[in-house]
Image (cartoon, rainbow, N blue to C red; front, side, top):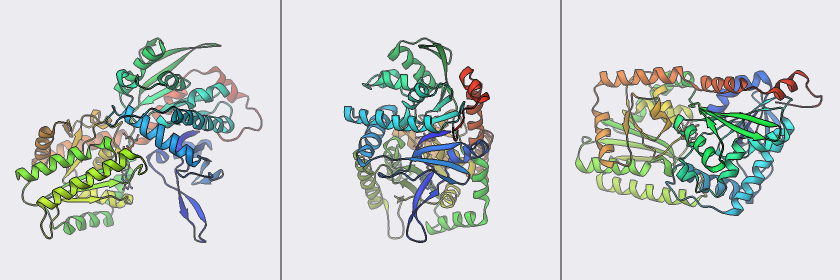
Length: 477
Ligand code: GDG
């Protein structure tokens, strides 16, 4: 069973004008689909809209169970505690986290709802995989109701250093919530180490290597915390990129830009963690200095995200003012140095954009992994193109073929962009080959299998006993 804040479906209008749910397979679904189908597992999540949830339904062989959030819960739990408290706190307080007791109450309540649904639905001895920072209390809440299930948790975003984490007024409850799991997965080893330190400092627990010892009424239990860097469906993306229509579209994009000498590309959710302003600043200065040749173009896809959260509205204004300034200063009739696209595109268009680029700019100030960097690499079957990659991403640990950069160092960022643009085709190919090898070998299927294998090896007498003697009447799992 998967428990994630979002269901892998979108609400669409059906042919008769009625609302329907259509599967929106992302990386997580792709990775988990085979195992979910094989085991008849359920996926519990929220649809993304306030109001009634879609009833349990089947989509592409997945059994989906929707949970409802009220308008107030969307505000306090989702936009509040998840996106304005935990998100900035876990990303090294790039924005100031807000601590409100009412938001915390909503977080507890909603986590309870998810845990109840999981407890109701899980088969005896089931394996339950809980995802991400929105649901950190679910592991413990679920274990309190169901001692027979194996619980895994994966944190998609960074886990911050203790000095930052310690600001959270509910730090102890969060750590105790997470420790209800048997296995905790993080993107990088540094994240797992930060979590283990928080166990020692916030709760006074003893850790040994990657193991935390937790005392419970029935005895002690061992919880593992380790790195499982997430990845993408690399083979599927390579296949998309090789399609005739996608390659043709990549050529059209360059033509539409007026066949520039240099195409730089950024693709991000419009989020302050992604370093979009730092990137624009460096690019603007490179144009001022005339270091990129006469007609460089930067395409910046900024997909709309969390539009009701204030920090995101402010960021959007700042980005749009900056883009306007650069285009006003350096543009001409028929030439804009920045093509800013505040839109969401189909997968094929994204692949064509990746293929059309000479240099990909991935410059987050902090990012758990960053799948865009891996998608760019998987798309470049032609082994061309270079990648500028922030040191503060999980992906940087895996892609030494990239040009590493500290995005706070604007001078360094400028120099690195110029180096990446000036790389010889031979050198670019050597770097791209190494990165492609890594991404194709460590794809998302391998990530899921490695997490689930490790979780399956956690000794659990209750889970083994429950599976051997299943109780009547339990569903799913
Ligand atoms: C979180 C963590 C971690 C973006 N615009 C469009 C579009 N996208 C897709 C990208 C990519 C995904 O969205 C973004 O993934 P990232 O990993 O870059 O970043 P977050 O959204 O912040 O994800 C992150 C991730 O979880 C997984 O664990 O890597 O660190 O923050 O797949 O391609 N896709 C389409 N159109 C768009 O306009 N189709």
